[in-house]
Length: 138
Image (cartoon, rainbow, N blue to C red; front, side, top):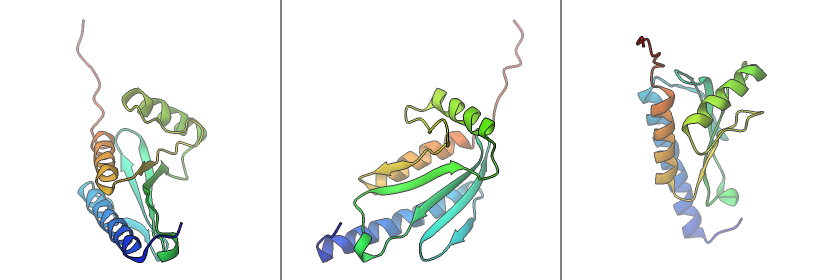
C-alpha cells in the first residue's frame, strides 16, 4: 500500500519504536535477539507457561510501510505437534485471543503500536509466571 511520504515516515518511525520496545520487553525476561538483519528481528524465549516461543517483528521498506503493527509469535521449531496442541489448549484457557491449535501461531496485529506493546506485555507477563501446583489437601 502506498502512502503519502510524511505518513510513511511516521509509520516507519512507529514501527522502529515498536521494535525497540520489543527488544526492551524481551530483555526484561532475558531474551536476546537470535537474528537481527535488514528484514526482521527474531527472539526465542523459553517461557514458563508455554515452553520455547519465537517472537518475530519484520522490518519493511518505504514501499511496504504498513498501518498494521504486528508481532508474530509461534512455537520454537523443535516443538512436536503434541507440544503445540498442549500449548494452544493451555493458552486458550487464559486468553480470549487463542493460538492456532495446529500451528501454535499466536500473533499480535494492532492498528496502534501502543496496543501491540500492551498486548505483548500482557502475554509475556503471563508466559513468564512460574507454574504453580496446588498441593493443598482436602
